[in-house]
Length: 306
Image (cartoon, rainbow, N blue to C red; front, side):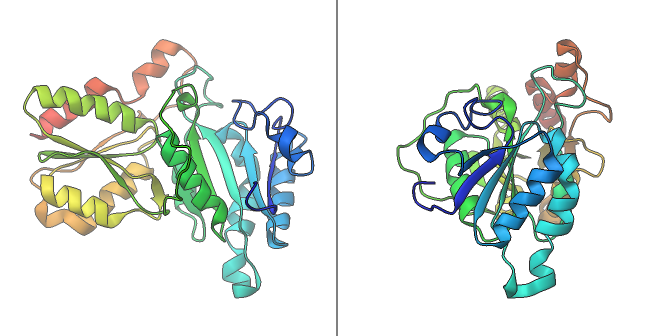
């Protein structure tokens, strides 16, 4: 926002309150209400306004208090923001970022805990980002804001409370590049967002059993870093895909299909998808933790693949 006066924030309670999870705290004091715009509770309305602002040359960053509420703005995102470039060519650019707090782990129940990134992976013209660390969130968000097209930026709400090192200066991280979290030679664990941390713990446990697991943080889901997926699976011969998003027609399915496209001849075992069961996310803390892929489930799945 200091670098580019065209960047502005739009969303519910993002002003003096500082956002539902404190992400915009203090920004209104520096940039004022014309660039940190509090909105009514009308996701469809303020998303449409932001898309229009992007068409005029501004760079809006739209915040959805919970990712679940993004359903109220699907028309503006899917049929408008993602399509204008295809319809109008170089006459239209839509440099807009949709920030969405997704994920379970806080007992917010069935309508405040979902991960909908799989829906948006299906949309041409829209990029989908899901960081797992503070440094990646910063570098990828810089790239997303500077991108001349619409970007969905999925932030796991359970990671907001985790303290992580963050350099004073961060270079933009190119969208579409994965990161090797831990190198290994026996099985590739392909994942993103909060599940990266769960997978890293599981990989450390597997190492105690002599199983060398490579953890790949995909970071962006559209575009997928197919080169990184290919390099890892061709090395290990096994692919374990772990997501918090639902498995049926979800991101894990697309990632598994990508493995088949780029590394089928190298596979020594069937691809395994580890996702929540096909059910609504429970409010009960015990039941909620039961459905989210756990360290032990990842360890067991990897062990069985060996």
